[in-house]
Amino acid sequence: MRRFVFTAFLLIIVILQIPGEKVPYNDGAGWDGVFYREVAAGFLQTVEEDGYNTYHLQRILPFAILNALYVITGIEINNDSLIKGILIFNFLALLLGIYWYFRIAKKIRASAALETLGFILLFFSFPVLKETWYEPFITDLFALVLGIGQMNYFLRYEKPKLFLVSLIGGFVWPTLWISGLLLLYLPNEKVIQQQELHPFHKWYLIPGGLLLGLFCYAFFAFSEREGKSLWELARNLISMAAVLYFLLKVWQESRLKMGANVQLFQKKVKPERLIALIMGIIIFYGVVHLMAVGEPTFTAGHFAINLLIRPLQWPFNFLVNHFLYFGLLVPVAILFFPRVFREAGKLGIGFTMVFLLVMLLSLNSESRMVINYVPFILIPLLKAVRRYSIISKDLWILAVGNLLLSKFWYSINVHGIREAFETFDTSVYMTFPAQRYFQHFGPWQSPWMYLLYGVLFIAALVLVYFGKRRYLKDGSAPESELHPIHQPELKP
Image (cartoon, rainbow, N blue to C red; front, top):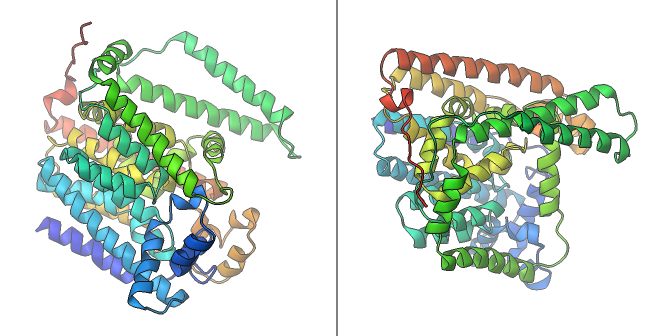
């Protein structure tokens, strides 16, 4: 009954969103969406005559399929028919994601309360309930759904289906293919973790200090922008210190025994599977480059630069924006992180490698870039709290909180926003009314919006913390929450 109620509620919201407001820029296509709409309008002709670059080839599949369907069925191709078609595609993708999620819940033998918790944290979010229907010519929802599919088939040990989903994903979202290969070819042997946290060593301050010093030098020596202030430098340095602290806490809370895990890797990873993993990466991207025409507008180098620069904008801005974008999943996962990582470790070497990759990529404050990895955080979290007796009141509190953060109720289109979007000026985007939309995307979020959501994020952390303490006090936590299970070190 609870499954039906929450699923019906989700679908009602989405159905009401479908005919609702659309981004008032490029006739509902937005920015990158203009290209994807062009793919949906003329893929078969363009791929034969002109082709696409590597960046676009790894993202165009849904729109290419839409074009093929329109051509085969003889449906008239225009902006109005294309936006209707992609909205239907997105809705069908969401249904598939819901189906795969319930399959996962069944596989991990989740109780009704735990299943509901996962459903709320996964689907009651801004990209699912607002962004997809406001700016439908994007691949974000498809990436999330394929990530759910990868998680489902990985847990079920259905490797041919996992391979197929990953291959399809390689033409929807670039990191889906790499994640799939790691899950396919690295063993499911549990990684080895110790009982104690990794201690902090004073020598950690040396590389940290060197990085901060190097940044100071680069700030003055290589930036050509005028008007650089000491306040900006201080803000960037504090932000860099926040990144280093985040990485340190991930390392400490992981409790990985590096020496023992290196031995485990050497023992369990067969050379032929490692070769298959490497060849899978080389062949796929080699084929993509052979198929590509022209220079990509966004390369792996650009992605790496963004990963380095964006978290330096404001301290912990990546966590604040993930909270805004994905909802209460973020503070809940943070406060249960030691148990979450332990459950990730139990899922094997391959899954742990993907999980660590998520931790690294999550430094990007543009949260949509890691949307396909949400299931890889959620499922270990559900396994970590499965023995808690979750009460209905808390589920409703989480549901209401996530619905508020999802902004499904929020009107983005107000007077003057079309003109603001059409300026194509970042300084305009950082002010209202454009901030009604851009506040949800870290690199273009104004300082005031960062401050507002930072305060809300801290408040959410405090509420979840006291909620967790209440469960511990009531005795509803498993014994392993109080006394972590010690995993013995692998013997040589």
